[in-house]
Length: 129
Image (cartoon, rainbow, N blue to C red; front, side):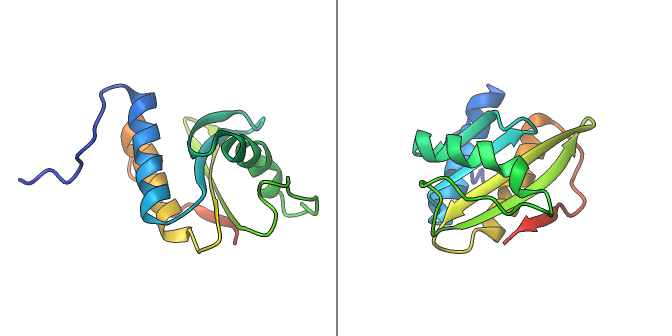
């Protein structure tokens, strides 16, 4: 069997960052992040300030009533947010960039589940496009 992953890590945090960086790079995105419901950044790929801004607003953007302004680092960009449950906790996987990041966001969700050892996903709900 030919291993397609070149860079790997046994450390879950490092593995998660490598997977997010792969999605960010291949999808030509500015950032891809994993955040929890209080906006705390769990892991990210991209410029730190953009990752922190994206992580902070991802939970807010998942609310149907969100009508707030995006931070300056995210203005004028496409922001995609997906919500998923891991052990009963809500986790947000989000991307930002000028292009469409939906396919790469889905790949990131699959990677998050694989790296953190969760069962195969049912389709995560697209929240923002």
